[in-house]
Length: 349
Image 1 (tube, rainbow, N blue to C red):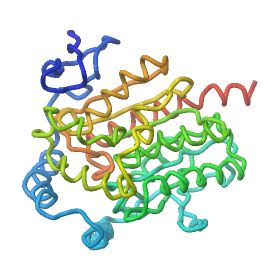
Image 2: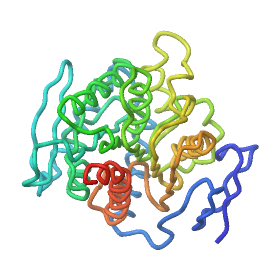
Image 3: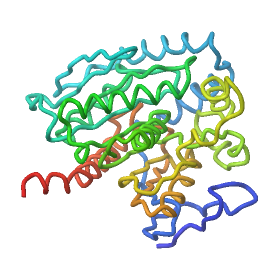
């Protein structure tokens, strides 16, 4: 087994990671965990993203007019998916946004045994409870823990307002008896950004940190200019760099230049709990994951970066029942169990 060479994460002119290989070297930028053949469902999803979703996102501008239309379209598609089974749902309304608690069927309503805080993706602009209910339900069934699925405020508001909502959701868990040592934050894409931003904001205002952080194809660096020469700009199945730029301009540059401190990769990361990052091998946001992995390592934070071959951005939340998604979510569940284990041992001692 051979480690990939590492320079600035995947930037042309620096050292681009070598052709992905299975590696366990701590110096590697990531570990390729599925080097075999992809499933039929995965290949169909890839084809749809390359042939339909990608061209659409590169053609239709992202602005205040198109965001509501896109939100309606995505929500309608989500309604075609069967409702997940084996769970119970409880609707929760907070000031300005809503959430739902998803529990394994028959599970206790008490939160003392722990919970996941799940923050959905969608470019801070689209998606919500219904689009990500399936992945949240899958995590609830696999971990045996309740999952708080949060529908935070979205664009054309600010990204900072979304962070405020997620912190409020965390406060709600703590207020209702959840032990922070048995809480794990998780999110995909923009929700991965919010996963880290919420933990950092919570720490800054004196709240306890959770037991672990999980980023699924997470956006962690809002500086779209830094990615313009990244090799995966041309390889990503459907996420265009121009789309990321439009989202950042709307949500973080509407009152002036981008504040670098808003991006989790630029924060003081020392003291964060263990981190699991999962990304598609050829997606644009692999850049963010590699950069975060390097900085977590420099800060002494335990972390793992897994790269999935032949998959698309946020594949595990798009089709949670796909074979590769089931495998990835199983690894997420294992991480959750390990993250909350110290608190469980202390509770039963």
